[in-house]
Amino acid sequence: MGLMLVSGLVYHFVFLTAAREGWPVVSQLVKLVVRDEFAQRDRFMRENLDAMASRVGDLQGRMVKLEAMGERVTGLAGVKVDDLKALQRDAKPGGSGGPYVPLDHPTLEQLNDTITQMEHSLDQQGDLFTLAESRLFEKRLSTLMVPNSKPIDMPVGSGFGFRSDPFTGRAALHTGIDFAAPPGTPILAAAGGVVLSTDYHPQYGNLLELDHGNGLVTRYAHNSRILVKTGDLIKRGQPVAQVGSTGRSTGPHLHFEVLVDGVPQDPARFLAGGPPPAMANATKR
Picture 1 (cartoon, rainbow, N blue to C red):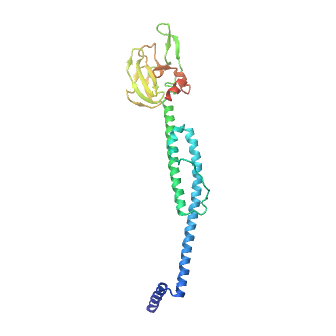
Picture 2: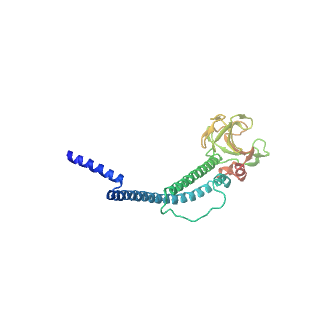
Picture 3: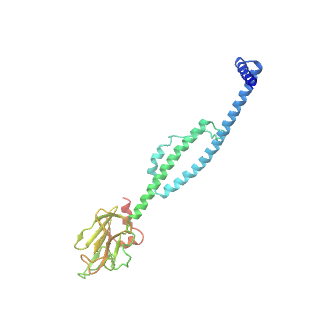
């Protein structure tokens, strides 16, 4: 055992000495070994680079699909050209061109450059989807803030427009619509908003006003009781008052009004499924 160990050490020492001093036979043998080792290493690196290039090519194909999807989504979300100017400024000015060199056998530097470009493109696509999500959320909010839900599940009695005043008998403008209902019937918010006021009014009695933004206000009049207070955040369909006959009223009912920039609108046009053109124009300002 000891003899084998000594023999191995001597052989190793002699081999290293021969390699260092360039003994003809040993030197050639060392060159062959080193050459084979480098060849194996190069082959291993090339196989890995080719595998990486294949994966990068697959990712580039997915990026093209993602960019096309991003264009469709931003279009549906109503993202305007002006919103994309910042992204356009990132593009290099002037023309571009040159031969197309496919990444069949790319170098490590080429792969790194391609991956860096893809990361930049992914960042831009992420920003685009975030902007589209913001626009879609704004649209959803605007829908939630439009009073197109009936405040009470009762048929409309007196509608919007000129009518014979129930007290004087003379023609007068009725600025809302009436829902006849038993006293205490729950009144629901026609849309989300903020409680603007809960004051008593000689004409409207216990009057509740909700602010829905963009100059849009709804009024709920003649209530026997108001369930919310000024400044409260209100959700669509939330109970906000109860039917009564306070103020200038001939019997228990809800008088419901919709105002845009202080001008009364026909609530029936909102409850039919969407705001009239005047409201649509107001929300764009």
